[in-house]
Structures are given as C-alpha cells and as structure tokens.
Picture 1: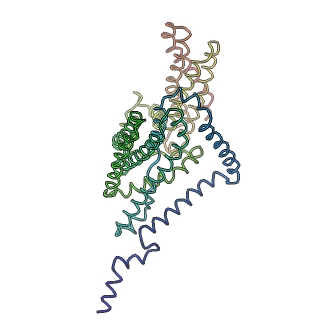
Picture 2 (picture 1 turned 30 degrees about the vertical axis):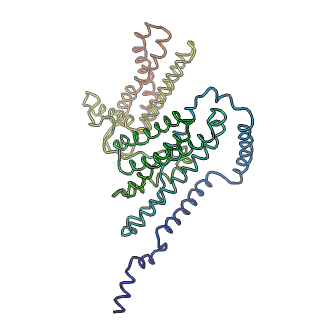
Picture 3 (picture 1 turned 60 degrees about the vertical axis):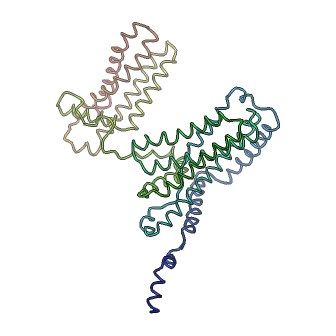
Length: 431
C-alpha cells in the first residue's frame, strides 16, 4: 500500500514539475525574459560599441535636455502655429501601428509542454502583459517629448493631456492585440483583408476622438475606458484560441528579430517567399509566336527577369529615375542624357542575359553559342524597347509638342533597336 501511495504521489501534477529545470510556468517565463534581454543586448553590441556610444549619448542627452527645458520655459516653436493639432495625433497613430507582441514561445514547447497547457497559457499571458508594458513605456516616452507642444503650443489643459495619454496607451494596447489575433489566425491575402480594418479602424477612431474631445478630459477618459474594455476582451479571446501554436512561434520570432533585421537590412537581401505559382505569366503561356528553340529560349529569359522581384524592381526603378531625370534636364541635354541612359540600361540587360545563359541549369540544354547569342539579342531588344519608348516620350513631347506625340514611338523604337544591336554584337556574340 505504501508503495502504491508513493507511486501515485510521484505521478501527481505537483511532483511532475520536479523533472523540469523550472518547475512552474512563471519561472520559465522569467528565465526566457532574461534570455530575451541578453539576446537583444548582444545584437545591439554587435553594431554599436558602448564606449563610442557614450560619447554620442551623453552629449546628445545633455543637448536634448537643454532644448526640452527651453520648450517648457522659453518661446514656443513657430511651427506649432502652422501645423494643426491633428498632425501630432497622426504621428501618435503611426506609433500605435508599429510593433507587435513578444510571447516568448519556442518551437520545443509543442513537444515538451504539450501536456502542460496551463504553462503555455501562463507564458502567453505574461508575454502579452510584458509587450503591453513595453508599448506603454514607448508611448509615454514619445508623448513626454511632445508634451510641451501639446500643452503650450496647442493650448491643451494638463488634465486633458493626461487623459489623452491614457487614451493613447489603451488604444495602442487594443490595436496591437487585434492585429496580433489576425496575424496568428490568417495567412496570405486573407490576412491583409482582415488586418487592415482591424488596425486602421481603431487608429482612425483614436484620432477622431482625440481631435473631437481634445479639451474634454472626462470624455477622453471614457474613450480610454472603452479601449481598455476592448483590450481585456482581446486578451481573453487570445487566450482561448486553439491551434495557433506554430503561428504564435513564427510571429514571436519576427518580433524578436526586428532589431537584427534593422541592422542587417543594408547588408543582406530579404529572403524571397516560397511561391507555388508566379504572379506574372501564371499559366506559362508562350510569349512569342515562333516555335524555334531560340524563341523559346528568349521567352524563358524574359520571364526570368520579370518574375524575379529584385530584377523587375531594378528595371522599373531605373525607368522611373531616367524619366524623372530627362523631364527636369535642360533642353540641350535631353537627347545626350537619353542616349547615355539607354546605353546603361542595355548594358545591364546584356549582363543579365550573360548570367542567365551561363547558369548551370541552362548548360544542360543543347543550345549552341550562336543560338544563345541570337536568343539574347532578341530578349535584350524586347526588354529595351519599352524603356526607350517611354524615355523618348518624356524627351519628345516637352520639346516638340504635338509633333512629339507622333515622333516619340518610332524614335524610341529606333534608338532602342540600334543600341541593343550594338551590345548584341559586342558582348553577346563574344560570349
């Protein structure tokens, strides 16, 4: 009997926690929170030396404090009389739309904490409370910077300013929770259909209420109470969701990696999402009427450029910049600049084709050197013509008026064809 009682006691829920390094959910959350702080500080230290940063933070803090004191005691900046009060409210609304929820969940919880749903709920609740606390501190810090302009520049009473701060914090809580609920439940295009109204409607309502009752503290407090009620409902609804664990982990990882993403934005390219069907030429229909192998190779190269977001973005960006430069250039420089820009575009197109044709996968196909050169010449011509025609329109219409409407298409086609043939002869035939 004693052995059975001892076995039953060992298998009880209370004793089962002894097998874990952290026997309770709150202690596990505390451990992960400290680990999260160390992770974020390590990421920051990789990009900023604290000894150098002190030489920037200390003088900047002293100078900023001096200006801040001057805003309270000295003259109010002149821009407060020009910009309406809604400008600051829109700035705060943009702040409310940034950020998300850090839940501190990990992939291994699906395996090791599967039988302890109360632990997962405890981590979720504390993660949301932590994220809401960070949101409140961030809003309070920005609001403190804007407070001199709100009170002294726009004439808002201190009581109304305090009520507006509470309204801003509660609105930020509800917006982040509603957006988080949509993100973990929906994917793809349906997510955006639900996410946009879920965050923009509360943000727009916040701006409208703050502008309408800017000098009515009690009405602002009543609005804050409504947002607080929405926050409590969203918390309860979020804890009741089932089957969102993988989405929770993915969204949590995105939020924890935001600082690293900002630091590495200019160093690494953003990974392309996996797509089962391309957005452009979804049915892989033939682009050219000819059935010759060179024509099929040409169509494959055009599709490769158009379907690649980086290449297409570069093509469109260069086209837009070229048209803007030609539009503002003096009349005597327009044609010369047009020729130079067309040479640059064709050079890039020829470089793209050389990379495409030299790929290992393309090397498997039985194309000769002459066939590759012919296909590349045709592809470069087709891709260069839209660019040269648009740039020709920007040059001809301002210079020649109605005659320019008749001349820009044949001139653009002729210049694009001539330059593409030159690069085809010089670069593609040699390779």
